[in-house]
Image (cartoon, rainbow, N blue to C red):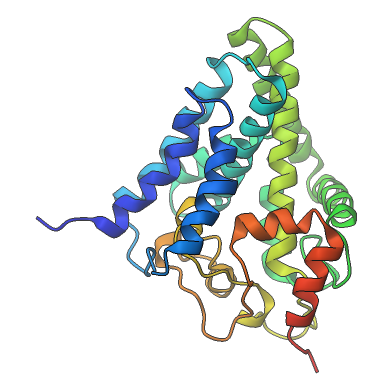
Length: 307
């Protein structure tokens, strides 16, 4: 029997959600400490391009019940630590939803993807992502492409507000429905946990998840511009090559290939030869982004010339 080593490794991405049930703060420790350390010391490709299988689909579909288990049954003992950890899990749930909403040929994957988005109160983002971001990436029309010199904080305000306003203008009834579903899930958290306090916990964690999503958008396209009449190329997204980070974020790190071939499933993605490369892995670049002067001093010299 063939050993499915390259498929099985993605199951390890479930570890933060599983560990959070038993150890407060473990998702933060895993993502921002252990993963960068492994990436620093392990210099090998753990995520070659392989066909998508049921095994690689497993962690995507298993994330929803694990997330609900964390929300609806796990008590909060350390408010700040638990809310930040839950926020990281919510951010990962949007990342997984991102993978699933691209799979238009599978009703189950779409259903789970939309469930995860609405748990974050961000169901309206699906239409924005597919119809705006993937069509207009790198142009002023795309709210998820950060301009050179733009700070993360300015980008977060602009992107979140423009996403909401655009979604409301594009489809008012759909926007209202998704907002209502988001509040429904918060109500369910209150009912399962038995107190309004957990509704606030869910609400704050969802906001952290949205902020993490938009932080990823920020680092993935920072400073990369495209004329609206030019085709999307690999030069319009930053790639990040490392050992463990691609596993934990389901190869979102291979972002230029995703924009070149949006229907590719995550195991099939690869680092493209001529894409601009981040100097560090995703967790490190995300932390740097919260210090604008540091992030810009690192990234600005690496922005390819558009002349």
